[in-house]
Image (cartoon, rainbow, N blue to C red; front, side, top):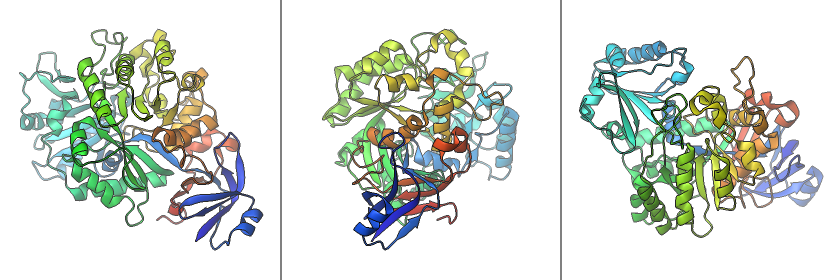
Length: 533
């Protein structure tokens, strides 16, 4: 049984502006393109999908996200839209009032850059509203948390505790621990959280997938396997959820180096799996984030010259991790926000090149220098960029890095013009999972909430075709599926994102509307705005 898709605008993304009148799909694959008349004559049409003038694209795929983490934000206290410290503390108090005393309270997504007074929350303030509960509040970047006294006591953190390698335990001016823990210091807390059940993970995945469908995503490259206490349990949750009971979503799993031995001992291989769950590269963190000034720079921060950021690993340990990945025939996917972190990773992969043509992935790549862009030309790699960071990080990032150092930062257009392959992601739940917001940021370099519509880096604006390509062809290339995903083409997966309005014709602000009409995976309509499934 096949399906004829017709009566809409069908962008194949094979070339800019390339459209076809109709598409024939069968057994989850695109079988033919052409006119409706030609395809009707060629195939026995037993199912016709009338697009009713809608706009069809290859399925949008998020190249860097945390699918379970995104699902958790739909289950936990969401702080991401709160615009003051007082609002966050009130939400914590209200949660505490309806939670049995002694139970953990976990909140997601606080961001002091949204507050008029950007002073971060401290343990004493949380104690005042929820002293009878251990409380853990994750910053939007997930490179910092703030906890209260009871949580610190449970973790054994005292005023005499020392910073772990690759992490920071923040303090008040008098030397007391203030509850803010950055990068690897967070692990001390997360290691003592109550164990998470398989059922919880499955619920988070189900909620996360439903949200992705509603935002037009047919798949995501996700990194979750090291955060929930047990590699096999987390992997089992993916297998139990995706592809079962109509939950079609193509998850490409990055494997954190902390659980790579578990992965290897189970006999897994690169790209092994099912059509809905497969393994990708080995994940490494090289540095932190700009929000907490832990991204590793080659110079001091302009707004705090006492620090240049944090290196998660020594250069020797980083090189050893790369060597381990190569011994398992794996490429690497490395979180590199600061330019020095990026440089150290390029040094490491130059000494230990990837194997069997398997492309390395450098994730974020926000702060760069011209010579670093020159160095990666010709290397077997791709950059996983998050265009939405432009909307979130500007203008404060200019003061943080320094105006005279911004030329090659968030420089998506420069990267593409230099022939560097790029893929588009959200880093959800760090940023909204909606890929249309990422495309909008890429093609406008604005924040939709900015009444002045300030364009940050107008020379780095992408065309609509380039912006959409990040989330279609780019994501497919990043996970070695450029021969069967990312385009509407014969032999490719029948995964489609269908919109009510055409961003090519209507302009970028179309992307800010609720325009996802349908999401199709494996020829199956998994989401329809008219009939939610």
